[in-house]
Structures are given as C-alpha cells and as structure tokens.
Amino acid sequence: MLRPRIIPCLLVKGKGLVKTVQFAKPKYVGDPINAVRIFNEKEVDELIVLDIDATIENRAPDFNMIKHLASECRMPLCYGGGVTTSAQIQRIVELGVEKVAISTAALENPQLVAEAAEYVGNQSVVVVIDVKRSAFGGRYEVLTHNGQRKTGKCPVEVARQMEKLGAGEIVVNSIDNDGLMKGYDLTLVKNIKEAVGVPVTALGGAGYLHDIGGVISKCGVSGAAAGS
Image (cartoon, rainbow, N blue to C red; front, side):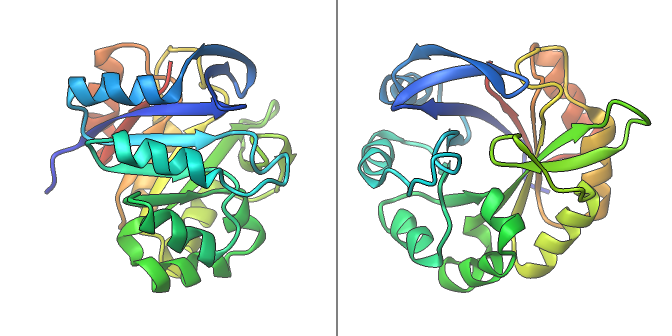
C-alpha cells in the first residue's frame, strides 16, 4: 500500500491565490507562484491547483499560468479549472503537469473522462466531486460550477461511474466543511472510499494535524488535501 499523501490545495481566482469559506467569500492570500516555491521548500507530497472561476466564466484553462506553475513545481502537480476537452488535457500534461482534474465537465460530459484516460492514461485523470449535504434529511448531493448548480446526483453513484469510465483518482470535496477548519466530513469520505477501488483524496475542512491523521486512519484514503 502506498504511503498516504499530504496535499496542499491552492485556489486561484483572477490570477491570485484565495481562500474560501463554503465556496464563498474568497479572500486574497497571495501569489500562486510564491506559494508553489514555499511548498517546494516544505517538500510536500503533491500539489493541487484549482482555478475556481474558469468554468463559471466559460473560460479555457490559463495555459501560460499552468506552464509557469509546472516549471516552478518540484513535486507532482494536479491542475483543474476550465477543462472541457481531451485536447486541453493533453496540452496540460505536455506542459509538465502530472494530473488533470475534471469536475463540472465530467458531470456534463462523462465521456470526456474515458477520452482523457485514453489520451493521457488513467493515472493522470482526476475527478473532483463537490458535495453538499441537504438542509433537510442530510442527503448528499453533487454540485457543479463551483458549487452554484445542483445536479440531483448521489456522490457515491457519481464516483462509481467515474471509476468505470477510467478516472484514476477521486477527490471528494465537502462544500459544507470548506474553509471552516473543523475537520473533514468523515461519513462522506468513507462512503466514497468504500464505493470505489481507485485512490480517494479527501478535501474540505482540515484545520489541524489530527484532522489529517484522522481521515487517513478512519477512512483509509490515499490523500488528505488542505487549503486554509
């Protein structure tokens, strides 16, 4: 079994680095390139960079920014944001990015996941599932467009579908816990982990070292990602 990875997650908005709370109230916290250099020195296992506005603005990935990030990054890099075609995925990988994250596009065009796996290999295809618990009954639902659109889909069913299509990794992101630093949604993470055979990374809620240790030991995830 591979050693679990500790993964900083950087959110990019308007070329700046931001932190959010439940996918809202973005607060500028610095420059993405400077953050990459800091994490190089910290020797983290992996880095996730998500452009949170690209899909909402119907904008293609910023390939120039991705090139600069990849050239600075000394650890495996996963990029997501605005990815809608297999050609974009291939170009991102050619720029030196090890993994490409797909979220909204994977829900709107599931076949893209299969195409991407064929183009760049399963190990480079990551599907990010943004999940929110309903106010009544506690039912989990997958949202898209940076948490702005409901899909009515169950995250466990979506995770299984994406694995069958060829996704090599699932990132399960709790909208409810995002930015609160009060711990991961262990129930949600465990449900996803038990449903699929591919590596699962938890995101949303990390505040302390014991949160990271807890989600790894209690849910058996392959990665624990943290933003705030």
